[in-house]
Length: 122
Image (cartoon, rainbow, N blue to C red; front, side):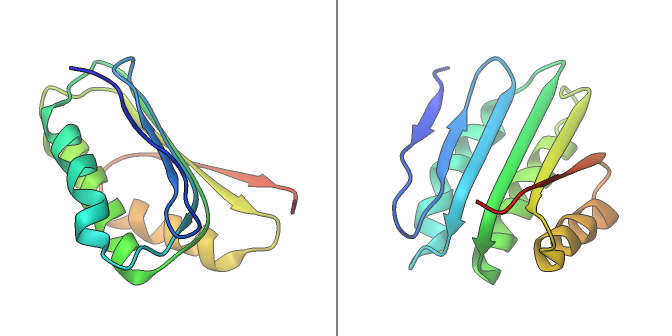
């Protein structure tokens, strides 16, 4: 299995899914076709197992369809019994309650712990 790296565009985030168990999604996620964009991410995640997984999500903005696929990725990780010690670092810009509350909502419906990390506006 190889790392999955997707470069950031104006409408899609950078994605780095590493075989060392560190996943990073960063930027804006407003793809015109979210299903096509997220398909390789979900497929990779289905094939991945690890004793330790850290998911860093730092999205300044994401649309509803992206939200659905991010939640699906987290569910795949959670539902694979071979995955252990999963942690989501949910980054949100100072004062951005929408992004913070989205993370809190995700955490409330899946069994993965979240750590909320506020950062200063760029």
